[in-house]
View 1 (spheres, rainbow, N blue to C red):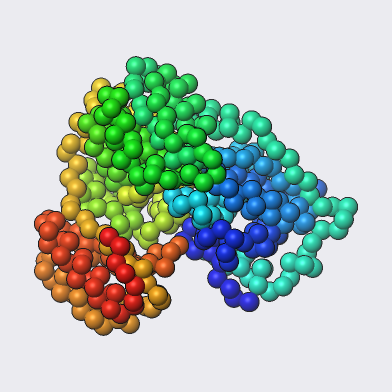
View 2 (view 1 turned 90 degrees about the vertical axis):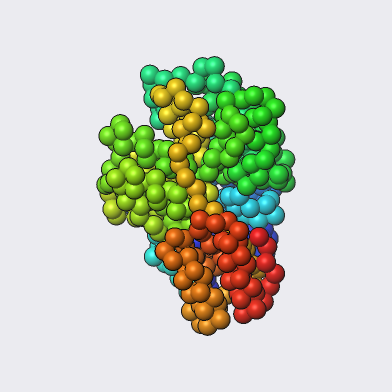
Length: 456
């Protein structure tokens, strides 16, 4: 009873270690089936996709067993980006969608996240109710009778459906003909979709990280390791590089000079473009507390507000929906174009950026040249426990001292990771050397208070 299963973005952890076990997956499949049976009708259906991790087979089969045991049918699509699953859940009129992925984490991890029938991720309250169903022992009494057990089938045209959807988000009057693009698929879920959609829009695609073997997802490639794309762009003299992560919901880009363009810069670039075309809604852009001060300044120059949320694209989307905004995202590259999709979509972000390049006739380096980035230092500390930060007086004193020194020209943020036993210290300011010194001071106090080792 009361066991916490969900983290910041669904359930995540080391594969075959609690909570990421087949037993938990089976129970989650049963619980989500109970939660999302909508309306009358004889049949209900839940769609399942995954990335390319070896453990995905285990979790997929466990989820299928759990869902079918409750009298609900299953549609299986195999490897598919997380945003593709959000689209397919709504497009195929499913009661719910399930994505098996640990995003940018190594292959030894895995995760399970859910979408409601409209393609949006579940709010905290739904996750709590699923945990209650699993914990209170009621699932056994809710299983379907033998004659009503669900059935499972594979959907063969899912990739084609998503490719068509992505192409429709690219302006019809534009083409990518003649554009040389390096695409890093992170050996993940977009290894088929990514090269297909870019080549069908007539670009010359040089794909890397497109040979998954179950163990090499995010291994030295993808948005976490953009160096591979940077080197390839310079080697091939490509016009642009695109770095996706394992489930392709985030995107970082590389300009023609080999410089990295992160999510904040891409968000600022899209905001400017949407203001110029009169398509931005709500007079604001939504970002998390981790986004750089440079994004805030760029947004203010456009006459807009930057609305900040907790870390996680789910919280960005919730704020966008409640505030009537249609552009938001994270520094890591989760960019949400709410007019098109319900979650961060790495390929869509790339397509929207390429459209701006084509529309303006400018190189990516030229488009982002005036977007300032303040020095930002992030120190990760592996901790033995996650005590409330307000209960650590020495840490609070160190933070106050740094904030006084910054004198309103920077920020300090400390938070615990939602998926790992880590505390994260972020300090931002005008002088990189001082910012690093400040971050190390706070990290040292955290280490003394909580134990563990810094990992910058």
